[in-house]
Image (tube, rainbow, N blue to C red; front, side, top):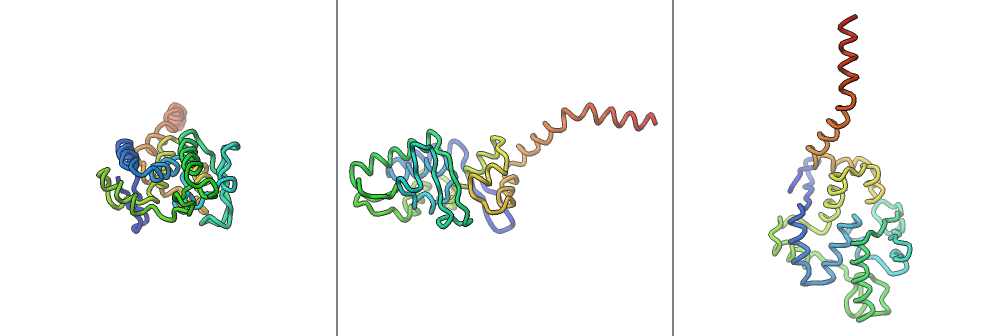
Amino acid sequence: MVLHFSGAIDILWLEEDELARLLEQAGEAPHLLDFIRLMVNTGLRPGEALNLRWDVEVNLPSGLIALQAEKVKSGKGRHVPINAAARAALLSRARFRAQYCPGSPWVFCHPNGERIKCVKKSFATAVRRARIDKRFTPHGLRHHTATALLRRGVSPATIQKLLGHADIATTMGYAHVVPQEVEAALLALENPLKKHLTLDAQTKTAL
């Protein structure tokens, strides 16, 4: 699905069946599968995910990913909760590390312990095999998370905090992705007031 935002940027996100197909195709490259699972469950930027280090940003016992200010785009550090799905992805990476490169600090690393710097090529292959719009990039997973949260009724302010948007206007851009949901929310707000609005109108007419 595509939305033209600010006349320049296309926001793409995945429907449930598309995400399922993408995960299935990514399974051929375990690191990519874990990357996608972590991304859609945290809203991290691709660079943030690929730069994660054990016991520095990632703290499984506390259930938090602590992103340091100097390593994020907005220049402001933030803490991202680790849900069950994100934990499963991280534990998969931990098992890989224990087997191949126990001394590596990187969450996403090659068997020799070096950091995986880019997943664009393998991601594009999985996207093509999953029959998804070829414009969908790793950063699109972040758009997907923001849109999914908004569609579930999470407030833009909370989404801004989770994703680390410097400006709430960036987060509010996603409201245009779900016009039906926004309209339904406004109708839900209107219904409890309808009786009072009607009575007020009747009172003014009587006067």
